[in-house]
Length: 134
Image (tube, rainbow, N blue to C red; front, side):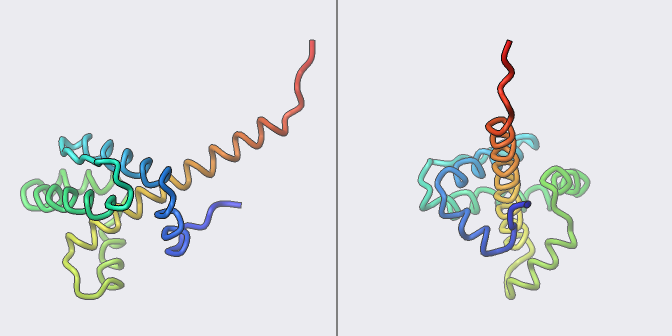
């Protein structure tokens, strides 16, 4: 059964240090592909605020100057403009940039959760496989 990717599952994942570190690494990697530097100090308690501020600056930059690159960026992160609009409506009185930044953090965390799920499934398959003898 696939992992749950709802808001409750995201909240639980955000309490796991290993997933936070992996999500930070994914954010750093994805932003670096577009020439944007995002750093993470390793302080898992301050993860959200630390990366949110850095990401938002880069998002505002790419949105304002290079719209086609911005669309490529959304595609790379696997986020659609429709998803951003839904997040913005759900979040209430927040800017497009804030909604997008939040959505990207959530999307990156979901990527990590899915990767962890399949890694665990692969390990279970290896553990269940009969050993070959010669």
